[in-house]
Amino acid sequence: MRAGTGVVEGAVFALLGLLVAFTFSGASSRFDERRKLVVEEANAIGTAYLRIDLLPAAAQGEMRERFRSYLDARLAVYRAFPDVDKAESERARADELQQEIWARAVAESAASQPIATLLLPALNQMFDITTTRTMAAQSHPPLVLFGLLFAFALLGALLAGNAMAGITSRHWFHSATFAFALAGAVFVILDMEYPRLGLIRIDAFDQVLVELRQNMK
Image 1: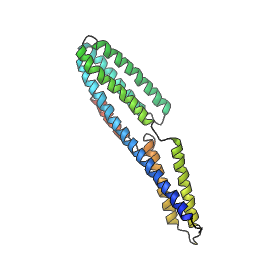
Image 2: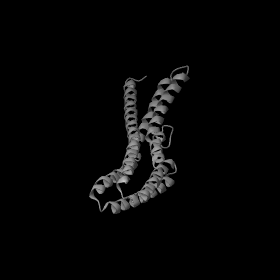
Image 3: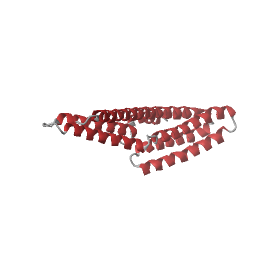
Image 4: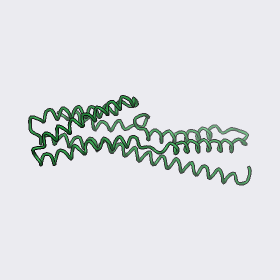
């Protein structure tokens, strides 16, 4: 072995370890944030729905029906994945229902400042969380970072294979362990970055919205 090659290999593997740790930590944080936002949206919709009781009795039935349709549309957005076109269609329908709910709420609460003070901010929060969730779903590291991770993973495999090339007997177990560990780490990182498409999913947290829908009577 040439002098100094161990230093190069150590530096490459150290950088690979840092990249894996950095991307894994970021993916885990974003995954937790997306789960948290599901609960926040359920709370926001539930609070706004309860405040429909403040409206005149004649307007409550229609407003509740629009809320149910709106929540159905919001659930349909996430159930549509990985069909992005269908998800966008459902999101557009939810946006239309937002405008209808807001216009109706403004009209019905115009004569009462206390109602407007309580209901309209709740609706604002309910609508704002949808934008927050959309941006959170689209928040990912730059592609160049993933490219760098893949490049270092391949470079690490190359150096490991080169180091083992001089051994007369092949150690298949060690080779397989290295490949599995590296590929597994990268797979988990990507899976957490796209929790609607892979094995690590946040669909179970949508049950909070489903239960809220069931309680909307």
